[in-house]
Image 1 (tube, rainbow, N blue to C red):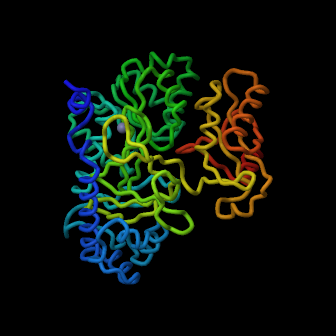
Image 2: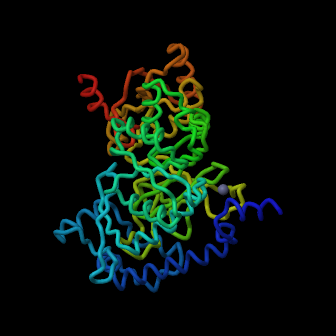
Image 3: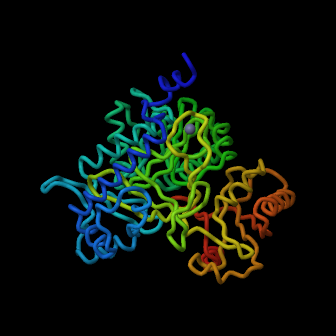
Length: 452
Ligand SMILES: [Zn+2]
C-alpha cells in the first residue's frame, strides 16, 4: 500500500481530510452563505446587528463580504443577556420545547454561558471525535474523563465517549492543582489508556508524583496517549513531556464557542476542523483581514446551527495561519494559537505574549517546561504607556537542579538573541496555582502576592 493510502486507512479518519483545497473553499463559501441567511431569518441578535450595519444577507457571497459583518465580543453577549434579563440573547437556535442545558466556559476572561441542546451536543461531540482519533483514541479503550461537568466540553466529551464505546474513568475532584493527588490515584488504580486534560493540570499531576517520590514512567505505564488543551505547548516542552511520561502527547486548540483544531502526528501547528468552523485572522486595532503567516486576533464562526450560534465571534486569542502545507498530507489549514490578547505585555517598547518567552525558556534543557510568569508593569490596555526601556520581567520557578547563576545568564542571553530585549529574572519557590496557570501577573498583584 502507498504511504498516503496507508495513512488514510490507519491515521486519517476519512477522505475529507485530504479533499482538494478548492473543494474545501467552495464548501466554506456555501456554509458561510447558508449560516448568514439562517441567522438573519431566525436569530434576532444577528438580524438586529446586520440591519444596523446595513448589510443584507444576500450580499454575503464569500469570505471578503463576510468580513464586513460586525464582530461579536463577549461584552456584546453579556449586554444582550442583561437586556433580556435571562440567559437568552437571541443567538440561540432550538425548536420550541427542546430541552437545553446551560454549559459554562472556564471563565479565564469572564465566564460565558452556552445553550447546549441535544443537537448541539451531537454536532460538537461528533466533530470532536476526529480530534481524539488523531490523538490515538480507539473504541474499547479506557479513557480518563477529567472535564468538570459544568463545562461545555464535558457535554461534548461524554457524547464522544458514548459514541466511541470507551470505558470512562472519572477521578474525584475538579481541575485545580490541589486535587492532583486524586488524579494520580485514579491513573494508578484504574489504568486508563487515554487521558485528556488541561496542560497546567497535567503539570500539577507530574509535580504530585515527584512529591510522592513516584516514578512517572510507572504511574503512566498503562497510558498510551495524552491529549492536552488549554495552553500552548512548545515543541521542546512536548518532547520533554513525552520523554518524562513515556507516552505520546498531542495538543488541541479549542474554544467552547465552536473552535476545534488539532495537531497531527507532524506536530507543526493545529489543523483547523473546516467541517466545524471558520477562522479569520484580523489586525487587532483595525479589524482588517490579515494574510496567512501574519499574527492577529482570531475571529471564529462556528457552523453548528444548534444551541448558541457564534458568527464572527472575537475569541480574544492571538494566532496565525501557517503558510506551508503539512507533510501529513491533510489539506485542512494549519493554524497557530499563541495566547490571549489580554496576556500581551510590552518590553522595551515592543509587544510580546508569554509563548514568545516560553520558546526561549524551553531552549535551556534544565528549564524546559518549568512554570514562569511575566510580571507586567502596566496592564494590557495601557501597553502604550509602558516605558520604552523597561526590560522583560520574569518570575520563574527555581528548577530542581542546575546552577542558578549560569542558568540565569543562559536564559537572559537566549531572550536577548530571540526577542532582542533585556530580561530581569527572578527565581521563586512557587507561582500562584491557578486554573490554567498564571502566564502574566500585573505588578500590583505581584507585590500583594509577595507580601503574602
Ligand atoms: Zn498535518
